[in-house]
Structures are given as C-alpha cells and as structure tokens.
Image (cartoon, rainbow, N blue to C red; front, side, top):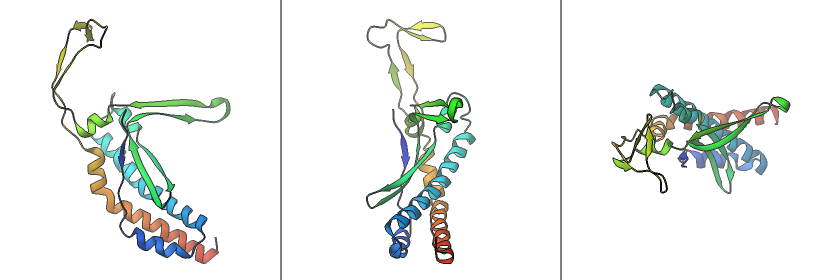
Length: 181
C-alpha cells in the first residue's frame, strides 16, 4: 500500500518568505499554506488529466480518482503535497445524507515504477489460483513498463506551480496592504 508523492522546492520561496517577514506569524503561515495549496492544485489537476488521458478509465481509473491534495505547515517547511494511490476514506455529504467513499488504488506504485517479469503462485494453504474461471498452479507475469505519471507531471508543470504559488502570495500581500486584512 504505497502513496506516491510529488515534493519539490519552489523557486524564489526564500524571497517570498522574507517579504512576509513583517507579517504576524499566524497570517504569514496562512498565506504560505494557501500558496502551497494553490501550487499543489495545479499539479493535482495536471496529474488527474495525465492519468485520464492515458486511458485509465476502467479498473485503473481508481488511481485517477485517488489523486488528492494535502498541504500545510510543519515546522519551518511549507507543504503542498499531491498524493495518489493507497487506501483512504472520505466522507461526502452532511447529516443523514453523509456517506463514506473508499478509494483503493494500492497498485499505483506499480503503474508509476513498473514491475519486472515474475511468477505468481498461490498463497500458502491455497491449492491453485483462479484466473478467468480456470484453476492454475502458477502464472508467469510478463511485467509492466514504468509510466512515471507523477514524475513527468512534476517535471513538466513545476514552473506553472511556482507561478501559482507566487501569484497567490502576491494577491494576499496586495490585499492586505490595500484593505488591512
């Protein structure tokens, strides 16, 4: 059960952080957190589009729906983290309409990094594997090539994420100096 994560250091982050040095800590942290989420949203949307464009609309479509944006501040580090894969639950709706949705895309790491050819055998205590209605003792899996969805998305769209971060911080600073909040 692996979650794949895009983490990078934003260009010009130190300059923006220094510019926010005169702001109260709580406001500075809110602005930085919002900027990180804006940058992460760009990467998240791009990753979803990349996964959808590759034809992952069947069983592997749960990988696309497992893309989620997480962000925040931890110590001196700002995080706008995009993850996909793994298992998680999310609640939808309010009150009596509330229901939990579970996404199970445990195989996302295999799509990202690939797998070499290997032999699949039944678990201990089981006699055979059932594949398409037939029972077999073992299967030779041919492997799968690495697709590097998150890696290529981060490489291609990081400049846009940097711009989203900087523009969010700039808007918030301008708004503060013009309105005082």
